Amino acid sequence: MHCTPPYPPIVQNQLPALYRVRCSFPRPCLPNPEGSLRDELARHCGLVRAGSSIAIAVGSRGIAQLRELVAVTASWVKSLGAEPFIVPAMGSHGGATAEGQARILADYGVREESIGAPIRSSMEVVELDESGCEVRVYLDRYASQADGIILVNRIKPHTDFHGLHESGLMKMIAIGLGKRHQAVEIHHHGVRGLREIVPEVARRVLRHAPVILGIGIVENAYEEIADVRAIPASEIESQDGALLEYSRGLMPKLPVDDLDVLIIDLIGKDISGVGLDTNVIGRLGIRGEPDPERPRINIIIARDLTVASHGNALGIGLADITTRRLYEKIDFTTMYENLYASSFLERGKIPIIAESDEQAISFALRGCPGLDSSRMRAIRIRSTLRLDQLHVSAPVLDELQGRPDIRVLGPVDWCGRGGELVEF
Image 1 (cartoon, rainbow, N blue to C red):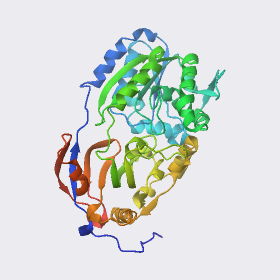
Image 2: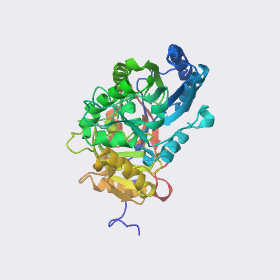
Image 3: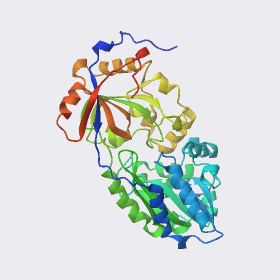
């Protein structure tokens, strides 16, 4: 039985006006990412010998033109007389099952028929020499049997911590290729494991495994590829850090620091490892770790879950209010497997569940005592990946007036039929 609120929901004419605005961010963009990657790979033909087997490691993020870039990589390997195959490098994602991880790749178009290389998905690992390392070191079994390993990953700031290496090639080497075993080993040490142990594990994998190249991808705030590099193993550590700093400068952010309500249409694993980017919302959700100083948001509403998440709503605990629509899409087995591996349990808590968007907004206003709805500082975004188009309330719009990076496109409605928000 679904609950009914003990007070009438607010009605349309009690809601503040909303306005559609467009934000401008730095936009370096490769005109032909596939051609750029081919040029990059052409400099490293000596790393692949004819007749060898090459594992191409691919992760669980929704990277721009991922299928095309992986296909270019596989084609290049075959042009040198070698045999490529794809391995998922995504830790405990996909419910920590071989089938689940292959399904994630398939959703991104990374299939044998589209790439021209077989998919070999397994949760089995081999243990590498970990002499002097405080955790055991693991590597995907199929990757360990290859003559060479090529990694394909986006490099960007992490949602759990900040350090010299965050979300990128070093983390994929350590946790992605180490599967659930390595994820549990490292996350057992909390944030310190991510900041300090991940680089050490990655160095040991680079020392003992046949990694030959890392393909580092940097995106701009519009989910376009700003840079792509083919990096030999000996330079992965240094280039991973340098590209992280470049990516940090391209990250989108909300145009104001103080909000009463942030409405997020979509959360999901393809958007961020924790479903929604903590750098954007100003909430970390890790006990003992301080939240970012800004932005400061009183209430966050999470409206829906991406299809590509396959029910993994990790990060839902960072919201204050969600919808029945999102809640009923959660696969708790899949989410809890990822939650267990991460060890950050706060992020799996279920917020207040609203029966409609209108009721969610009603709850949000109730959570801002003394606030008249006409003074509500609210922003609605499609996801934390896309902040170039926003819906903002009048008090926020007043603050944005005159800014060269803001263009006002006109008013929009709040809710349509059945108390649901109109399409973005």
